[in-house]
Image 1: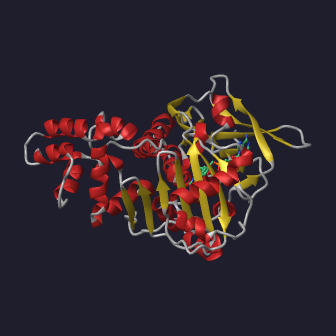
Image 2: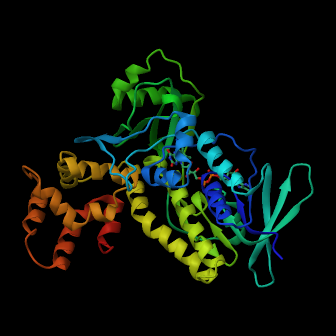
Image 3: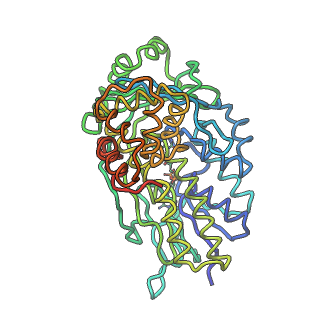
Amino acid sequence: MPDVDVAIVGARCAGASLAMLLSRAGLNVVLIDRGKLPSDKPDSTHLVHPPAIRRLREWGLLAHLEESTRAPRIRQYGLRDIGFDLMADLPPDEDIGFALAPRRWSLDGILLQAALDAGTELIDETSVVDLVTTESNRVAGVRLKARGLPETMIRARLVVGADGTRSTVAHLVGARKYWEKPVRLRSVWTYWPDLGIRNVPTWRDQANYVFAWPTNEGETLLGTAWKAAEFPSRERQQDAYFEVLARLAPEIRNRIEGVAPQARWMSGSVPNFFRESQGPGWALVGDAGYSRDPATASGITDAIRAADLLAESIMAWLGGAEPEGSALRSYQAGRDRISRPFYEYTCDFASLTPYADDVNEFLRIAVEHPVHSRNLTGLFAQTTDPMEFFSLENVLDVLRGAPSVRHWRLRALASVAGRDGAGYRRRLGGKLLNSRLGELGQYLAMTPSP
Ligand SMILES: Cc1cc2nc3c(=O)[nH]c(=O)nc-3n(C[C@H](O)[C@H](O)[C@H](O)COP(=O)(O)OP(=O)(O)OC[C@H]3O[C@@H](n4cnc5c(N)ncnc54)[C@H](O)[C@@H]3O)c2cc1C
């Protein structure tokens, strides 16, 4: 007999969200983490996009998060790149048109407390060191080790690894990685007294990326990123941070002249991969199953959305509506379908590779349009599907609204707007524009529009 329905390894945004949802649905859940919780997770810049904010509201946690952090609502994202300067409202997810950047002790702490309130049992300061398996190789529980105590065991109908990119559960089940790409950017950031930033300005050129947003009590998080191969040595990092700011965002550099940071300096990077995320008796959620460069600050949003999807699949299985295998497979397929276009967009964005002239002109035209500029910010905020934004129909719509189109490729593309034959137009559109959009374009060009 299992001791619990679900044992979840990792009690941060992915694990705590899942535990809360399953406990609220009446399942018996244990949450295990090797850290002492609640606590900060310093290697994160913790911007949370509207799709996750909407779920926090649905779960009844948003008001408390906002009251306890006094993190300002962020309604606009921007990017100053070679050739254009974007700052526009976020397209909403349902009626949620804002982001927040709460410190992790606040966000993870509130999710964890909600799980505990719903009946989840927490075992912290304890590591999962092995899995219990049956003769048929089904995962049937976890083996735990806390410092100074003998190893113990918990039997579970399902074991979920919500234990981050270096997931122990993934390692123990041998979960395969796919769509893997090398690390793109490495960042350095710290916190400053409120610099008056209430949106998300970002700056990018071929060498660096700069980002800023407000967090708890309006403090400003301000960071710079380098291509992984060009990341400065530890001794050089602070000087290099100020040099990059002076070059890409001099107005922000001036605002921190003579000001002391509010916290220590931090640095980090993230690998790019998807992992096989289910099998007999086990599943992965959050970074354990899908990890992407932090350039688009999406990990928490992805983790919360995936926890929601996985909770639905687990309930379908344990509630008897669907067999285990098909319920868990549809979780992984649903996650991948939603995440893959954003993944390609993120990896492409983080490569800092300049776009071709026609793509730059296309983006400049979109930036100047009131609706298309918002949709561009939604690519970052996960409220505009890249498949839709770069669909031929939308590309033509962007061009149609332009007062003038200078680049011959774009003029040629616009000239086929009236012709019949979706296949013909898609091929031409893919050739002229999508295939020149870096990795995202390659993905779009080989994938049918939705
Ligand atoms: C530099 C950087 C900047 C980032 N910026 C952003 C951002 O702005 N916005 C955003 O959305 N995301 C950002 N991210 C990504 C974000 O931090 C992650 O996507 C998010 O933390 C994933 O949450 P998770 O719950 O899946 O895993 P994690 O937060 O990694 O939590 C995993 C938990 O599992 C526990 N654990 C691990 N192994 C074991 C074990 N064997 N036994 C018991 N417990 C275990 C750990 O103690 C930990 O508490 C950033 C990441 C980095 C590195």
